[in-house]
Image 1: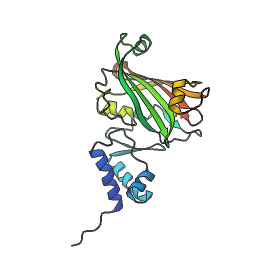
Image 2: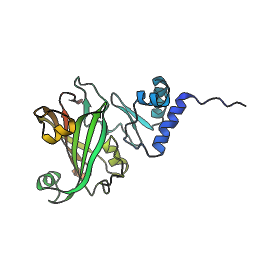
Image 3: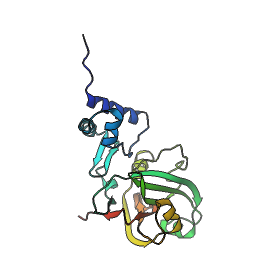
Image 4: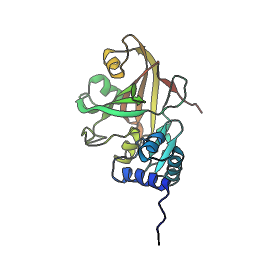
Length: 238
């Protein structure tokens, strides 16, 4: 008996499943875009969409409207997605790929430690990530975490997904309960201008965040800076 050829959408599903099962993509990772998958596998975008729809139905993937599709092994319908929504200059949601550019353990200074409610000189995990839209840097995040909360994450062998909090919840079993944010603007610094490939003396949007776990404990202090000419901040108040 001649075996029927495998449907094309199954080939796409198999490809994505291999990426997940092999650990190339983990919970919180943004999967390749539909056009990228279509080009790579030589199929139509409609075929890719059907495959992704099937994997979303199986809860292996999670679609975030306007931002892309993520690997999902935890409940992405909770507040992990609700803290902030970045958009383009028109305020529409955009797909942002994030890359970790620096990570290391440092001795916390008095100001940061005081904000986090921990003793001075507490070990903190510093993580720097750059966000890209179509390979153009549009934002950079400078975050500091209590090192005891995320032991070993300074090791570059541990992959950090696009959605950082998925790693915190899924790998370290640390609940992310809430966050406080303040949005300001400032003139770009030399370091940020270099990272974002922007001119000096241009304005950037600055988002200050405190992230909390159980018992109202602060586990993260973050500053995110975005190019104002390619970037906007959009949130929904309910």
